[in-house]
Image (cartoon, rainbow, N blue to C red; front, side):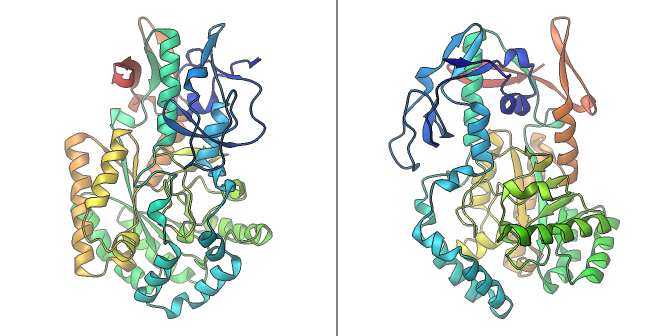
Length: 451
């Protein structure tokens, strides 16, 4: 039994290719429950046909690529492609279970106690508590550390099946404007008074490399400081967004309380003219995002091994959660690098950048003015800035503000490829910066090229 092709909405949204070239169907019946399996070597989570998905990612996983078949011009997959991709992006796989340590340190009581005492604790005390909580992070089987590109691998595996079936290149709208191979995005989360005082210095460092960045400011209880700092930032061409409500770590603890807080956050967003948001400590519940009035969110890590809330969206590309565009964090935070890993080099950042650029993704950086005050930390950050500037100047990587990425990705979502003689042209708002790309198979691998 099969289901008819829907054009594969997750697939066509990702590639912006003609729907009639992306006919993906689903072989049925699917397994009654969700679990892990493989497709073309890529991890998948959801229901599948002809195999039994397993509960944990480190078990022996069934490979389902051999079950793909073509019927009436439709490539039938042994799972629902959009369902599986959404399960990964929106972290639904986390419902399959937690470790004992995560359960006992992620309770409401534990979070409330930590954030109640946090103002009284120095970085030295906090980092020891956090290391205890993060114990065993390097043994997490899934997502993959230091960058997880599972969604990209699934997209390429599905594209490979379509190319095999069709026997010709598949055109699509390239991911970034002007044919950029990838995108970089600098953001700074401001937590306390020391961080606010250091914002001007941080702007100077960014400007010295010709980079602009976005600053996220905590609104509640700091309205006067918020307006003063935001005015200074915006006058110099930097972007300003909201950072949680009051950064107490409890935004997503309980649904009704979240809705009350979300209403206040939306009020501040309108009052301060902000389109973007990031929650405190990267806490999140993506199924609740519909309560926000933001255009874009930046609260979901790619692989959250070293974040207070584990999981990760398993992609290095922006994606939509309802009407909100998610701009995932794809790089380790400065606090994590310095105080959890005790690493005062850019080695990890360089490795993450390499993996992200290989998949043409978003190099999304968070640093904190609160944690860059020391000279050693500033030197590490300056080295990162120089590397990002070199990618921009030498390799054409698009260095953009979150608002610019949001505008591009929304425009791209509405663009259409139209046949034009022997080729294609792109129509839609912003299409003057768009490029037609082609996917082909070379030695069994999906390869991208441009007109």
